[in-house]
Length: 173
Image (cartoon, rainbow, N blue to C red; front, top):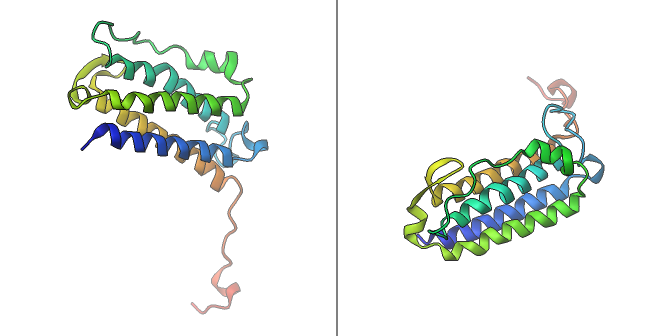
């Protein structure tokens, strides 16, 4: 299997799916937690998290495999919560979506530079000594996870109508 080609398709498709899901959330709901799950993040916080994670962690980790001369990047990923409080809360939703597209496109552009040996070579990165295959698989999984969370908000924000009891539908039990 050509991992670069496979992940090219998966990262492009999952990134597009995440962006599409974010765009489906009504503008007036993007900054609100779901009434069904008020303890969960609002859509904009998922977007900020994905942007922060991919820009601060994924992209630097992927670049780590391209340079043998440079040591691994700083294993401290920064303070996401401080970044959210300092800038994320006020950054425009559309601006964050555009930045996410750019960061994801940068990741996809790196993929053809990895040969089979690099895909399987472990490096010391944020998650420990793992191969590039693990890092990019984690990126794909993480995108799917947050796409699920956003789609759950979209689909189940409003209470679903309940079917009428059988006796009200004229059915015999």
